[in-house]
Image 1 (cartoon, rainbow, N blue to C red):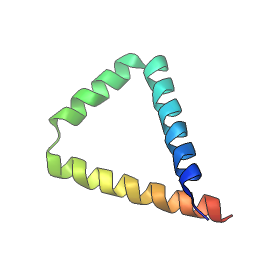
Image 2: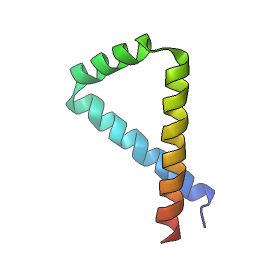
Image 3: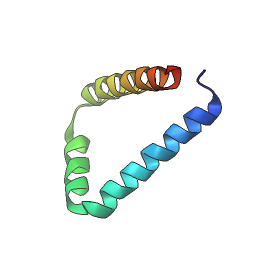
Image 4: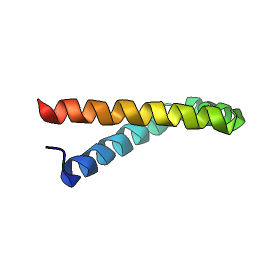
Length: 65
């Protein structure tokens, strides 16, 4: 069962991975953010919804194992 502790653990892992990316590749992360800033809002919204759906499905599958 997916509970709030699992959600918090997932958020912690995402923060750790994002922090590692900024520490290891600061130039690439800045370039990526600049590219994201130039995208239309609709494209960002669609990408965010797809990423959220994949994340929820993956968490559901992993916790269900």
